[in-house]
Amino acid sequence: MALQMESQAPPIKVETWLRGEPFASFQAGKVYVVEFWATWCGPCAAAALQLVQLQEKYKVAGLEVVGVAADEDASSPVEVRAKLGAWLAEKCPDLNYRIAFDPTGEMSKLWREPSFSVGIPTSFVVDRDGHIAFIGHPRQLDEVLPKVLNGSWRASDEAKAADTARIARSGAIAREQALKKPINDRFWAAIKAEDWTMALSAIEEGIALMPDNISFRLAHVYLLLHRMHDMQKGMPVMRQLVRDAIDRNSENWMLAALAQLFGPAHDHSHFPSGERFAMGKKLSEHILALNPPQDDGPKFRSYPAVARYYYDSGNNDRAIELLRLALQSLEGPEPIPDALKQHLLPDLLQALARYKAGRAVAALSSRVRKTFSPRHQSASGRKNT
Image (tube, rainbow, N blue to C red; front, side):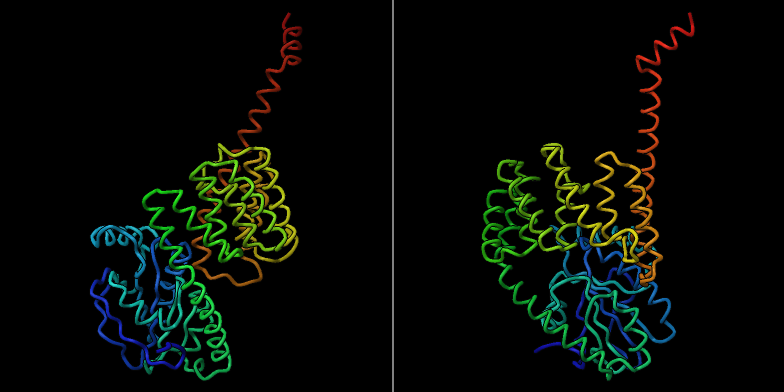
């Protein structure tokens, strides 16, 4: 049975509660956010901070947030609980809402699968009479939640249009996920066993089935270049990814390709240096053309990646300039949730400090080279004779 807006909210069936009192049932007159997340999910950290703020802001109005960790991967429940506890302590020290751990998958069967919610973080809003009012990404809660709390959301044309669009989009994603599942299962089993050949076989099967799937394309590059270190096969695959990203004029694809070439998580020492920087230059210039410095568009997503290219290529001044623009865009005309700002700010400031230190070292090296240049040494020798 499909789960959508107007549906009665399913029960919360969870045995393990990591934070807060166990949840019994939805109470009439209260509004609930049921949030699905995981420790490996990058956007989930920003979402958790946002939910802390929303819980504090709307507590008096009757809001209760329940977080459900349902996608953890570990060898034992004890290990998972330790990992979850460490993540919460680091990412969300001021947590003020319940957190549950669902190792059985029961919550996903009750909530996510019937609503075609394949990704995380995903928020379900349950209104004051126990019906689903909203299903979607938590970044939409700042706009949606006040309307649910005052009772105007569920009857609005905006809500109906949003849910119709979500069902169409999520249904298509769910069908694609069903096609990808056997391939992903083989791929992740091979990754766990460090059987790169088997993982490559699974990914190449996936690309044959879905040639435009960015996840398969990135996994292809990752395996050949970063795991198997096969430059002969990997560099043509990398070149094709760069060409396709530019031909699509897609910022998402270009950023993904740039991360393969300059992402800090990878070792690039075995890459052909000249070609690596040439591809980085092309991608960076196209990204900046899509979102020029003089425009008001948000820079905090793409500019840090481009700044990393310029820093690695020795242009510290340009890297610093781009990071400053990224920081300024956090206060730009488009509203950005405070939780997202708090999540992004430490990494941006840390990178800025590193690039400034690099510029200082480069300036010092230049002065040292001038001081000890042959011409300077001869002039000093003549002066001292």
